Length: 299
Ligand code: PLP
Image (cartoon, rainbow, N blue to C red):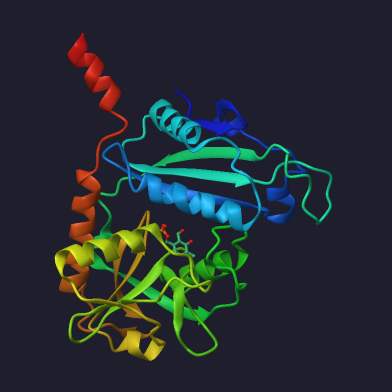
């Protein structure tokens, strides 16, 4: 079966999926998105992702295109139709299609809703076991990085710079020399006394859903943490470092620019955070299989 995408009320072959050339997402990056990871058929942190989606839409004065319940039904249906047990669901909502004009159109304009899925094998990924290199770059983005908009050009530039330097990610740095976040992940260090440190969720960063889950798990497990900015120098001399996102979980960072972090191996607390987070993902209810299992039992 060909892979399907959801576009404005229809499930269409991925290769044919398209929106209009005057979609404001295409013209102005006037839209928001979410990425939800799927592990063992489970959508990880679905509700917090939808909370953040609704917040991003509110901040941009875009009304929800459909109720949350219907949105969830579409998400499930696309994941089911595409048979995704391990991978991700991408969802994008834009202000809709209107003649090109900078000012917002009438808010009753139907919003554009697009969803795609991608399969990924998270179990066999060397970066989780070996760790990754990050580079540091100036943060040249705008002052509302807390909104998950599709306006990602500086992030794309940064990620390309990282790839060209043989690195996995670029950690962005503000004018005071403090790390804000990665181009598609939140930055963390572990201090010499074993405290997790990550930047507080102001307008300078996206408040990662993985970041929030890791903080909650740390609280539950009694792992000390601090939400405060840290400098590039502090990161380079930290005991450990890692970077978190829905699809990279908590990936250990073993090199920052030319500086090897500690002994160049993933640290023990980073590994513990990764394992704790993966256990959490594996333990969530399996939304995809629940109805099928029930009907099999009934039959
Ligand atoms: N920061 C940025 C700029 C991102 O783009 C992302 C994810 O795409 C994150 C942080 C991590 O967010 P989450 O954990 O919700 O994936």
